Image 1 (cartoon, helix red, strand yellow):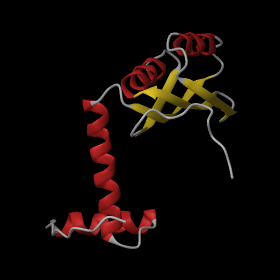
Image 2 (tube, helix red, strand yellow; image 1 turned 90 degrees about the vertical axis):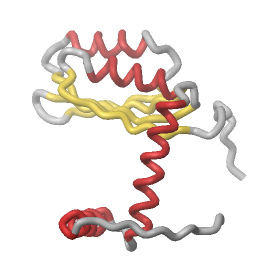
Image 3 (cartoon, helix red, strand yellow; image 1 turned 180 degrees about the vertical axis):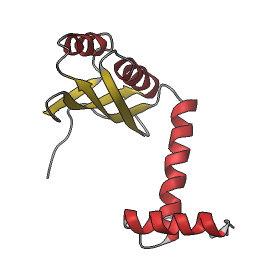
Length: 147
């Protein structure tokens, strides 16, 4: 494990109290753990912006109206315009009017973002969000083994 560097920050009392509530709600045991995760997320987002070809993985979750039969076709077309990025998709019915899908994506960060934008902007898709995790190098496809 790498050495730790200590630094001090000052927060207004109201912001510190809200942060402590967030920490407790999320299950962190210390402020330091929470700050480390927030810093990692911020730096990773910046890295993806500055290195659009960086190999990455993402989950894209979106909700759409299933009574509009044309939405499924538009979703399929959007995915086909970005070949090879969708690894798997899980589909579930939310309620009588809506479906939720979660797609696992793999590829260059910028292309994953383009696909996410294309899907979430489709008519009939109510909302969606992508969670992207930047890689450090090109992953070995289908080379996973267990001892």
